[in-house]
Length: 348
Image (cartoon, rainbow, N blue to C red):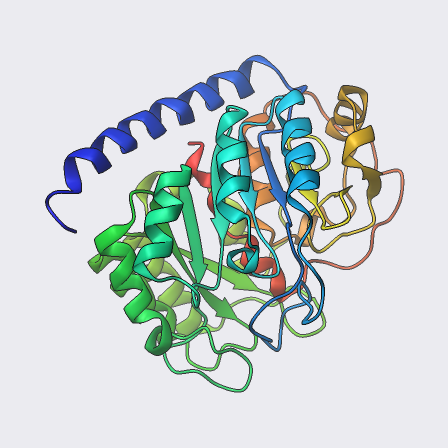
């Protein structure tokens, strides 16, 4: 990184850590506000990854005035962290204004991107807007017919981030069904650490959405990547250890309360893989809705791989029990859930 940037970058990091700890303290004091919200400003994407169910190639961006209304509503609810996802957020013409609005409402601002549209000038504009975290999931070393999000294509983007970004960067690699070469995850993780980024790993289900334990070498690579990653993530990702071993995970999912997913239509969902529940407009969402969902169990929880929901809910595992789910909400999360990997882990 350019030495002239480092002092400013350090100041931003100190400020960010203080805001993180304020979010943690607030979460312990009250259960009546969201900790993390993922919000979609547009469903369109410039890629067409074979496993993904979270994009289209035609939709228009949500108008800035409506996005600002939604961000203001999240501020009224007391949200600590707002993560922008998609689709591909960098395609939204007013992305930096959305980020600035998040910060103006007192929340930390994160983004999940495929990284293709990053250039030095855009990174600088994200710095200026106040972005706190950026995550890129890299699926393989060489592009294939399933995913073009490869280290070969994105490495030059990572170098740009290493030089210019004043926000934290997380590189997420993947293991599990559909990943041809588990060694790729280790290569990607080592490159991330080499460049000074956070390294995490996601585990995907098989093509039918069923839990499948990692094979011998996959399990070995998983442990190696874990050791390379951010140390204080380890105490929060026992759920991934269970998934890696093919075990169900016993936990209290607080989706709909502490973690919300807001689609491009402005509806509140448990997560990107369980869209339709509760399906209420964000503008009509109340503290009473948050309290109800905090107490409601989720039938999909034992086999869930949506890491953001896990990391967000971990702060409340010691609190009061949940009642049985009101509805059965379908199959476990699909491989696309890996996109939601680890931004909630920043609030540790």
